[in-house]
Length: 411
Image (cartoon, rainbow, N blue to C red; front, side):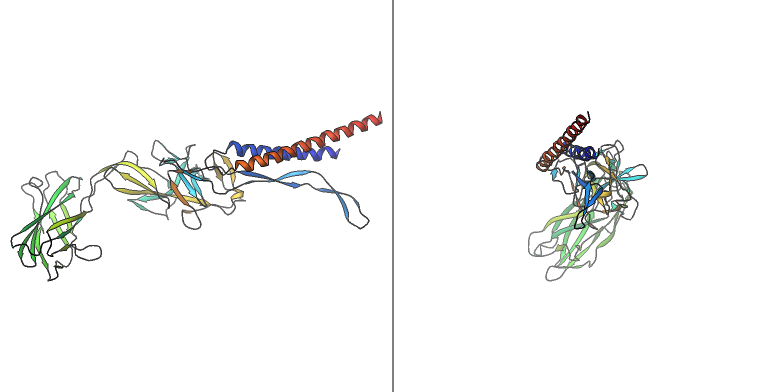
């Protein structure tokens, strides 16, 4: 009897709706979860006659589940303070490596493996663009993001230094002004170099650069460590007109390579950093580009996905850049559980790029994206689905009564 099939199809569809709503409610605290909605469609129709006007008389055969859609709207982003937690604001998915294929997720609740790789909670590597010596190559193939946990950054020997200073124009001939700056050799050992300025005539000062006694062996030599500074009548440095290069100290007692560096007497804008005016002589600032070795301390992720490691020596180094993937049809993605998706023919091939470009969203570290389940909407849908289930159940019992009456008539 077709009458039974119609409400049974309704019960089946209503059960699907109830299960979907229950799944949404059970995942309302799941990171990055996207709520689902069920859409129904009527089934085929049977022509049972024709009205006098010629209009067809058609009888429906019930209902079917037409679609279960995931709502890829933005969930709220909340701070966690955990550096391995990340959230995407806007379009895009984190890219995970599962064997030879990539999976995609909005769940940025990552962790670190024993090898220092950034991984999902089920152990899949988080993928991004690799960095070599702090330079990210976004044209390279994707690779697991590796955090240098427990690693030591090698020292960098000083190759340039600079001083911001004023030499008092009214100082007497023979007056000296010392300035000190800490430099580093190839082993990361610090040396406090002293630059001594001595007035030799009006608008003219000599300089000498020296390391502390004992920093060089008896056989150690120096080169270009002395010279002359000349100023015009406005107190501006006129000579040297370019940075002083080729300064060196050999025979360091700690066994490091010879120190060789340049003195940047001109700033980045080409303006001299040393002046001679009627004001107290003073060295107000120093700069140099060397640093000692440092132990890995922490890492951060920028809005563009750049992963930057910080070391105990205060230095930072880019170690990679997280990638984001997107597809033409997000509804076509296959849900795999664990907040992960794979591409299908319906979704199209994923396009992978850098956050903040090509329509991709931006990243926030130390944060997670919450589920976008709207509990008020779910409760409202739950009531509607429950009433629909009850109505279809009533239709079944009604048809059962009709059948029973029919049987009684026969007997």
